[in-house]
Length: 264
Ligand code: ADP
Image (cartoon, protein in one colour):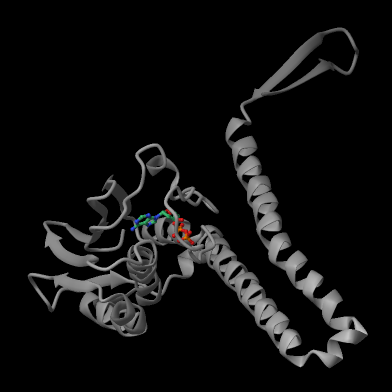
């Protein structure tokens, strides 16, 4: 709360009035806090790969390195991996900030076939799908279903969800289903997998920026920025829709989106 009090008097100074203004600034403080957290988390996430790159640079600048080209090349490869990570984080942050600023109004709304988004992302993820021998199913009762919205963001939404299903489950026997159907005034879209799942304690947090589930099972580090699902959520909300998730660890994870057929 902000309390602002002032003594008012008339020109002759005879009458005094006290004016008190009380303003509830909880919402403003919350927004400010979210912004501060974002900046703090982003700085933290960027600092780690930068420190690693700097460490390797120091080594490479060392004169002895000239005599060890193989080792130098290995160092450069590690540096590239970390600079790729920085680029990904920055790209994702830009998308989020574009969606959160008024620029969301600049969504390019046009009719498009959702099937074309599915085709697009299946092509982009083809090598991952093939390497993992993942079984992909598309459930779309009306293949000609037309959506209204920004095709670029819908492709990104679908890409992030399907890529997550694949990368979180690098095991044989993975099945991923992509579905889309009309339901009255709404369109329902879902992505489901039969992978490791998400612990119920983590479910409420997975759409938060930079949130990643602590890995309890032994597996090599899975690539990611922790921003993918925040982008998904914000892009869907910018289209007047919403997203929910259910998960039974070890059995099924399903993301379900509902979005109005016509943009409000
Ligand atoms: P990331 O860049 O880590 O993929 P996301 O925001 O896309 O970030 O996802 C946040 C976390 O949610 C992931 O780190 C992962 O732990 C969990 N997650 C998302 N999708 C799935 C899924 N299909 N199966 C299991 N865990 C998932």
